[in-house]
Length: 121
Image (cartoon, rainbow, N blue to C red; front, side, top):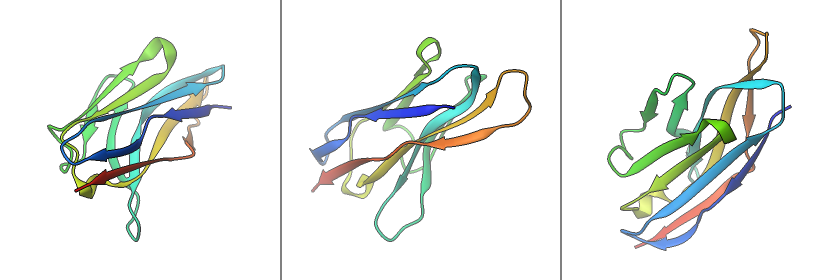
């Protein structure tokens, strides 16, 4: 079973930067995709950025050009570098992993516990 460990987040002023990281631990699985979602108060959870196993990365329009998602395949870790942060980026950020056991076509989804990002005006 895959476990996700998140780090990063916190409070920053508008225009500042933060970096989130998420590491998937466990054995006997392969990552199909991994990334970050966020949920602001009163809003639905939305995709921020995700990368697939072939390296394709998708970003929400609202963060394109400001956020960069990178990955370390050897460590099953993804990093979200967030620059030029805006107050509207304030949310709880959740790591997400879609994974499959080796030699299995079944996929599973795992969520991290969430980390708060607060951007002050």
